[in-house]
Length: 302
Image (cartoon, rainbow, N blue to C red; front, side):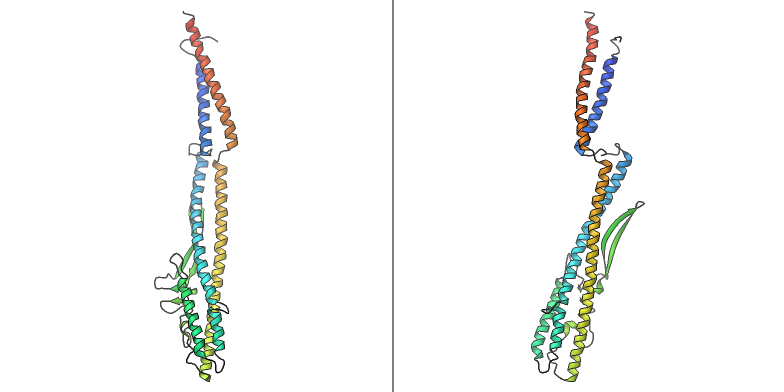
């Protein structure tokens, strides 16, 4: 091979090789530092675009997951209060019904029974008032309580169009007390509402016994209504739980999909890094040797 003072072909080749190795080394080091083989659009425009859209969807799904958690807590609060109002032999409507049946006994002191009934009435009202989560209370409704309540349940995107799914609840189905006395326990059905039943002045007369029968029928109907409302919220709880589990699974699935598109193979990249570092060292030596050719030509003129 001829030598020239103006053009050092060997040095130019070695320099080009070193530049190429340095470029590959920079790419590999970036992949190792970020953990991604596609971190910008310039790496792979198609994969980057898909991954960006999927990450945006996952952010929306995370928001849905958070909303489902809030909805689950709200529904659970109302459900727990409703089951407490239905009660058992120690309290609630079930105990109230038993006391009214007991009050039909001839010669019994109904004033004492009324004292227990009053305690149960106050207990149920207190339970309903306390059934508040994050400022939401469906059991003690006010004028500000919305007629329906929508719980976010899902998110999807088809053809670039996002869709938000929701569970719609009619609050009147769960209201025990309202500001207009139209709730399950404060609406007047017969001589009084469940919340205002008072038997202290009743006697063993036929008319008063008929009044007691009316109260028992009224409380039995209330038990059925409140139990139905609790069962409905129980079904909503299960639906929310199922949706929450699905959303979490979907988030994990999308994360895996994004990883398949953009994540770097760290084992392969580490191996490549070592190889490129060796090539870089050899390239520097090759360039040094090529530059020595020019020095050798100059020595001929000394």
